[in-house]
Length: 173
Image (cartoon, rainbow, N blue to C red; front, side):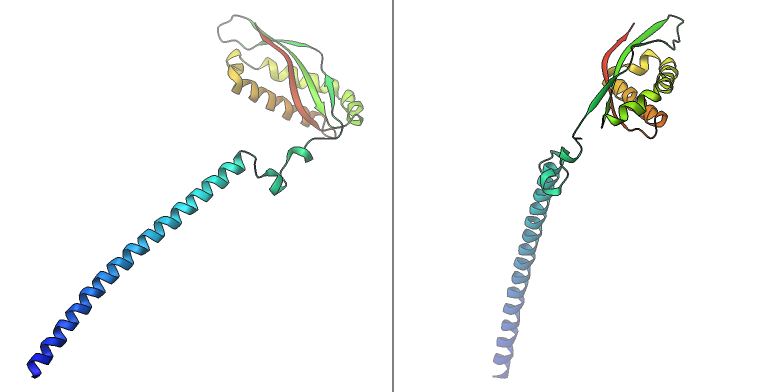
């Protein structure tokens, strides 16, 4: 009888072991599925949130709207037309004709800027004469020119703040 009882206990242990292995394999599979689902949801929410942020859909919620950037009163000051000869590597002269307009926040800055106008024209003339026609190729070249002119004018007229440099006309011959 003891042999029969021992055999029954061995079979019970084997059955529990098989059920335990199957149970842990099923649990492991369920854990993997859960991890995959959670990762997919996190990626979906992160991608959707990032896309909404970069498209500007979250700006009103985050208080990042352009309404605060737009001043109540914008003033534009037209600069005189400038013609400069560009630096050339082949000895053939090339010229740049540019007409600019400056964007200011307030009309009060207009008088301050007029006071510094000779300095502004000098800064622009010196910088433009050092350019080559290759520097102005494409929209990237024009963007770099615009940013550099804006930087130079804000340094030259320091108490006054110029918001933007606008191209009214630009011709390279």
